[in-house]
Length: 390
Image 1 (cartoon, rainbow, N blue to C red):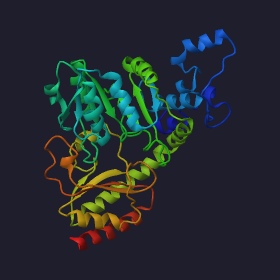
Image 2 (image 1 turned 30 degrees about the vertical axis):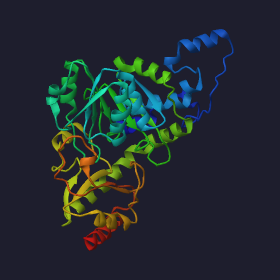
Image 3 (image 1 turned 180 degrees about the vertical axis):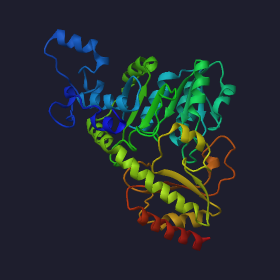
Image 4 (image 1 turned 90 degrees about the horizontal axis):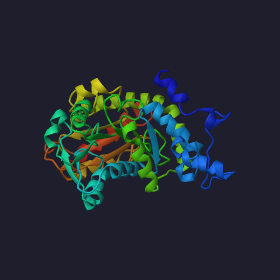
């Protein structure tokens, strides 16, 4: 089946949904068993979606997990209470004291904090690397390197990584590769086609799609599945059925929503490119974005997220721009139906490598599902306030 068809039918096996279109929402902690034999059978089949205990999963969980594997790939999927919880679970599962981690320098900020605090305290050393390093990442691999962590595009500055080049080098050195695939979601990037071993998503973003639930997912190849399954159970990870139900709902419309997000974001990015106060457009579909050719080769599209920089400006002018936007609201996160604007004033404070000194004041936008001309008009008057405040 084509992806559009799979999106509608994934996870809708009758064993989970019965006669209903969508799987029912099961609220359960204790699962009752009618006999010792039935209890023993459930215990033996925990890894095969058997009802055992609420934290191990209910039909609500099983249906969503099956849908994720059908759409993203991999051997199995587990669900977590947030995207950061999923990142934490993945890194804590495959790293131990004395191990070395290669972490992309453009990683999501809370992941960096996790590396510099929790993992450092555990005795895991993290080395940050240039997102554009490609096959030369081999020069950074040490004898104790266990994981290469990727995020493509990079958070905020949107660099595209050469994932196939990295996975080829990693596997030749018996190192696993993880990716934060939240941008690629279920539509734009196939992690397993490009050699990734573990794929993490903040399903909070485009999968849920309505800014009303927190959720994370991990899918893995068969080689790495059992360790994740048992380690996540040992750490007590689970997610509530109502949030999972909202994610399952979001899956059904994700392609339609992303098509509109992408179309509107491209139009707005092109409009911004023509403004005299704008310097760089950081959007993977633009040739000026680092890794654009790799994006064309490996990705099936973009979405509503991109950044741009002003040629000049200060706190006063950037504040005037943001404070006077009406449709673009200020708030963390992205991937919902609404448009958002967030500013990052000093990239040097967000990164370890000295690669971003030439960037001016940067604003990250998430383009929502509003009328695109209304959004452009909002940005236009915001830029006028920016100019008046210089």
